[in-house]
Image 1 (cartoon, helix red, strand yellow):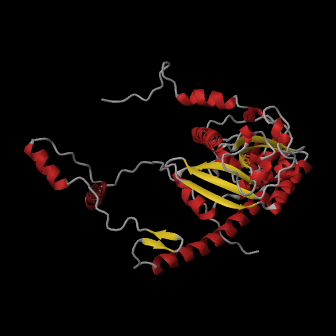
Image 2 (cartoon, rainbow, N blue to C red):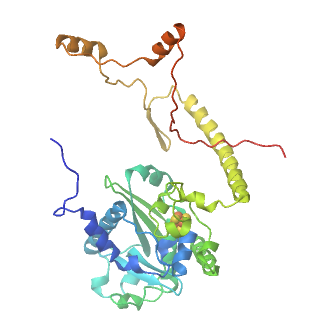
Image 3 (cartoon, rainbow, N blue to C red):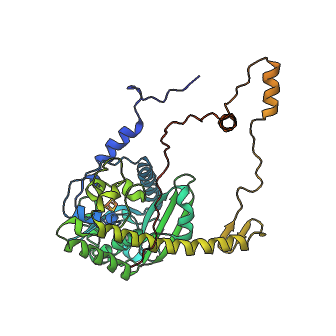
Length: 379
Ligand code: SF4
């Protein structure tokens, strides 16, 4: 029995509906720069200059993240009385903060219904992030990325300087004026297992200022192409695979070549890229030597936890199952079934050569991946 995976009109992919709902969200149509756009300078510049999106992005993983996000923040609002999804903005940037947990002194200035069940010891801004298991190790090891820090520090800066935005649904909060935020919390949720990892640290005005400087650089451009690309493009960095400006940024693929080929226009560009390649290769070889050294050094060490890392071994003495040729021949014999034979071209060539007969040849094109070979040349 085979299971058809063809889409039938009566049972379309549910992601079609999810995508339609996602596209209709206010944030999908906004053109003002948002704190969550502080990930790539070039992308920020497209938004800042009001460019139309060139790519329609459908990311079930991102939509799952949104659903998890909405469910968790709503639960936190109901059970803990935290302020969730609250808007902040100044003249340049806007944002929606996942969670604000007020301290007692600030909460007392609000109507009872807006006070937290348990007040925080200091005003805290929280951002919730979801990650797949594939990137979970990175979360435990390094915590928030630089872009995530810029985003959450920007929220805190906006609260510190302006307070909550004076918009429908949060006017009472806006009346509080600037809120003195002291703590930042990043809450990571593993999308596959539900595991939770919380990172807390004090508000860092330097990172917030760095984000302001980042925005100023974008504002100084008169065209998006003046802003540098922060990433290496589709099929290298996932953020570009799901970027709504990917085609504007890299152009369309020509003749099946990667889109990155579009930005190399002359020999000067080639020389600059090869210099980057050589520099990256030098770093890679040094890192590879260090890894090989460690691999050999711990060869006798059993699996287990050592300091902040867990050592495991994969691939050694693994028992595998493969077809038993002798047993199969016996079964074929007993069934009187013909045993398939494959012509042995090596033996046939040898026999023709020994008999003095020319070996017939034909032209074939073998597909293999092209490999780059970069060598030094004398000046
Ligand atoms: S495609 Fe990548 S480098 Fe280009 S704007 Fe988007 S995120 Fe930035």
